[in-house]
Amino acid sequence: MNETVVRPDPRVSIVIPVFNEEVVLPLLLPRVRAVMDALPGGAEVWFVDDGSRDATAQVIEQAHRADARIKLVQFSRNFGHPAAITAGLDCAQGDAVILMDADLQDPPELIPEMVALYRRGFDVVQARRSSREKESLFKRVTAWAFYRIMGALTNHEIEANVGEFRLMSRAVVEALGQLRERHRLVRGLVSWVGFSHTTVDFVRPGRAAGETKYPPLKMLRLSADGLTSFSTAPLRIASLLGLCGLLGGLAYAAYAVYVRYWLGRAVPGWTSLVIINVFFSSIVLVCLGFVGEYVGRIFEEVKRRPLYLIRRKVDGAPAASDAESGRAPERR
Image: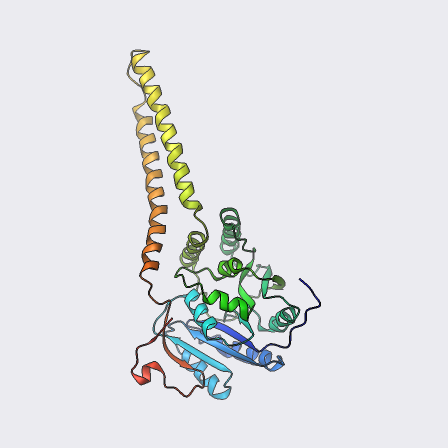
């Protein structure tokens, strides 16, 4: 990277997916406004309401009436965090787009430093957590395992301790806009499209308010989506297990023939035979599970349903919302 490159001050779009964040928004909004005020190129923030069941949308609408830079996209239902990220990127118009979470574990005050690195010519500025001390032991262990497994089984490196908090140039956002698969690990897609990367370190604080939206089961599902989206290694592992099972079965068959016809006695060890049968049957079921995961994803992709449906936008545009006008929800 040529550090002499100096881009002009960008117009910044901040994208924040929200789901039942009524409690944390009064803490987040003043800090986001202060950061936007300090950006010389101007800024906007897009909140994407992923089907919240509390007053999240109302809080954001009230903030929009006081500050038109604050905008809202409201889904017709919950489509998930990756879809909310995608909707925000589709709506953002800035030269540089900041993606962050609403829980204040991604501090808005880091944005000016990220913008400074963008001006030096970097297209992606990732925020890396230098400390995870406020997270549970389970979360730290599973995060460590996830990054190691992804690094070993995929061809696209995903840097450890880097979440979705990042800055992306307009070129990167447009490249991501071309990738419309349903099972999305955004940090993996950003790695896949390439462009020039750099990293800033920060100490990640605890969640400011509310509850985590990623319990263990949801984290496991996200990990499975990431692995199957970027690697066919599970299918290769299934083939390898099948080959090992075949070789083991042939070896045992040869042993049985030898004992029966050369030694003239029955093959001993019916208990071991049952154990071996159960073991290899389990391998077959695991392999079928791997195949089923990929077939299921193929099934969902070929239907080509939209990634999300927008119930309405609150962005200051004169056009009526889809819900108010009676039109079908917007498809993306």
